[in-house]
Image (cartoon, one colour):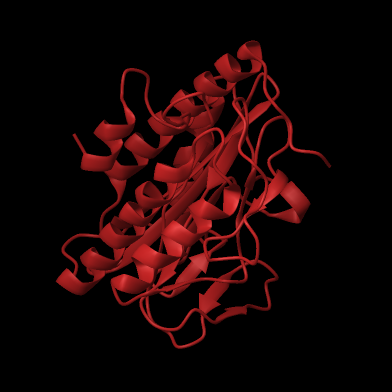
Length: 262
């Protein structure tokens, strides 16, 4: 499949999808606390997505059984919600969510603290988020895709962490996963040249320890091999003639607002 260039009409739909998705994340952040179950988070997200006349991107995607991926502590991605699993004080939880609005997807992920967490785990969350912003400094028309990958890896490793190698970002639009694949680590060559109208889901997955992972027997949940914690940060990004635009944030907010948490 070739990389699709979106029209202004398509981009406007994806902006609306992203605004809905950002609202879902904002509301989820308000209810994360010790004692809540991962299934309660999923059900809350599913209900809110549907209230905005949208469809959960993940539900039944290749057989995935939920609307939200809820990955706790050493779970990297694709954790399946469970009505018996309660979050506890000191956990970190990665929520990966997607919506379909008028036939177009938006995809984003955040890692949150559950109550009071250790400074080392807060640093892991912060470095993971900043690695995304280091990467998208190169998400400009005329640059090459793997410049993003290289910048993410460089920042992560300079801070003493590792980037997961078995999972990558992706193009996005009418399909949740489109070309190109977007590694978070340096590749041989430079990759495709970026063009205005490309829409990319860029998503560093960062481990406190080694980058090696296991895929569990449920065929979805990915965990760190060494049991160390992992964090995840993702946005849907539009390549423009100038600075990249984040499509998975609330209307009125800017790239700088997201970067600095304003």
